[in-house]
Amino acid sequence: MYEFTDAVDFYIGIIKALKSGIINPHSPLEEIVLKAGNDSFAYIDNRRDAKGKQGYDLWATAKNQCEDEEQFINWIKSREIAEKLLYSKSEQFPDFIFKVRKHEGKLICGSLLELKDSKSGSIASFNSTLPTKYKSLEEIDVINSKNLVSRVASIIDSKLSSERFYHTFERRCFYLVRTHAGKDDKVKISIVDGSFFETLPKEHLIYQMFLNILRAHIEKKEIKIPPETLTQLEKALSQVTDQTIIASSQIIEKASVRPRLRIMAEVHSEGNPHSSFYPEVSERSLNFIAGAPAYKKELAEAISQKIPEIEVFTIRHRRNGEHGVFQFLF
Image 1 (spheres, helix red, strand yellow):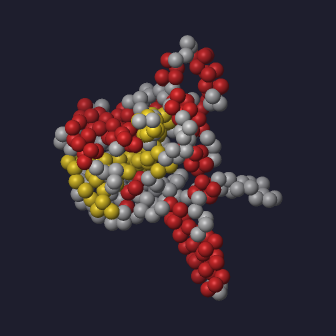
Image 2 (cartoon, helix red, strand yellow):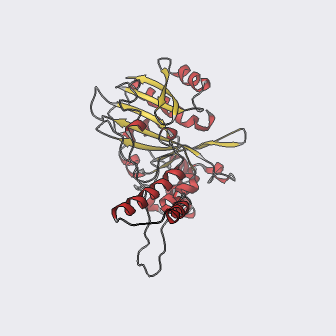
Image 3 (cartoon, one colour):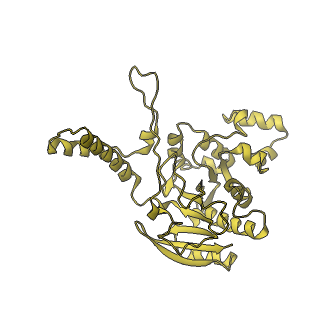
């Protein structure tokens, strides 16, 4: 549980904010996150609207450590952050990163949070990267083709960012999903563990995707390839598994552009916890969904102690086994 205590605290924070009336199920997801998350973020992608619309200043703590605005600006510039980026919408992955913590000498938390809002019952497409259970800052920088996210996070995480494995330790990925947005009788909101979407290792998924593309071209163009040659091609493609390499810009001789591939993904209905495959996930509910072995008695007790009316049950993912659900009805 310790590795994603930040996500659990965030879930409890949303429930408390709903109860107090600070937010409602139809509030913009960004507003829900910022009002429920308090000062728990190391990175916010849309810092412009966070401050302008929600009054949330990611840099507030850092500013308080400086004598005045000028000193703060000079200090930020010394950390290679341009002043214009302080309150910009960077459009990088992910939408939010929670602050890192340390437990028994080990870095924990620092979870990633992506927002997925939809007016229908389906989950909005993943436009920047494949949904996974874990990602490191190092991987995020390659996906984005720049290191802005890790630079901002390291400033906010302060001393902990100097830890040896800060950029490489695996952080949990969570997805704040809302379906039937704006429909009071049907809306569902869930914080979903990335394991719910990663039913196959991403390396296998990438390889199979390119293999499918190859087979489709062979069939469409009616190319006759000896079985031995096709086997060799498939074996070669099986090595194309690293999304960080695929997402990086490519230098091609004599080309005036540097092409890069961005892998998008759509969620199969069986991978959507709000679909009819999982009727236990009720309408007008806020859920925290975690896969085994993350779902444990310890986690259930921790949440139930703070929110007694939580209902705890399990659902069986059609493609990825048992997941625990903590459900709050509103």
